[in-house]
Figure (cartoon, each protein chain N blue to C red):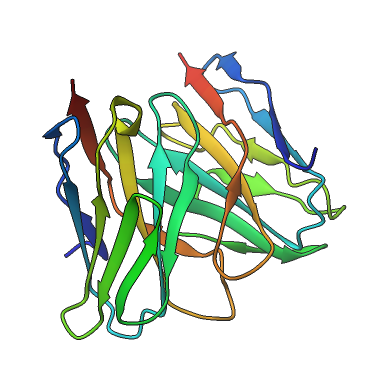
Length: 113
Length: 111
């Protein structure tokens, strides 16, 4: 079993709709969770971080964390063509090594006009 | 502006040759990382360093070597022992809280 799993997609979303991305992780002691966006041929950029159960909103993005179910999701509201990218879920287990993240393979999102 | 600079952007080498990828940061971050990305896959950790003169192997360190002689610099050498070196290599740094700042990457092709 992979440590961090995501559906590879592509996830096709009409412009203006909500894109829903899911991520599951295997280690119950995981502490920190991140969503990175990666445009084709570019490096990843952080868009959301979440550390406690519940929802966290930042603009059009909402991250949801459920540690009991080992599940973290990302919602993109009012999807725009510029949201077309691959979204990487990343999980950090130990507080003493913040950058030692385990990444999922990513979900490709395609927003259609 | 602060950031991470990787060079070169594209690199071509013949099989059997060692090659060194450069990574420099001016963010004053203690921790630096090297990741590898293959098409359709996530990032896999090669090496990381949390302090000058110290570094640790990641999940796929075989065939790679690093040094950390200065806080700003964390070069990666891809040796001839790496069986499948063609990939997109990403350097990152972290100031804490698990957030990574990435360079623009080096795309290495070995033929």
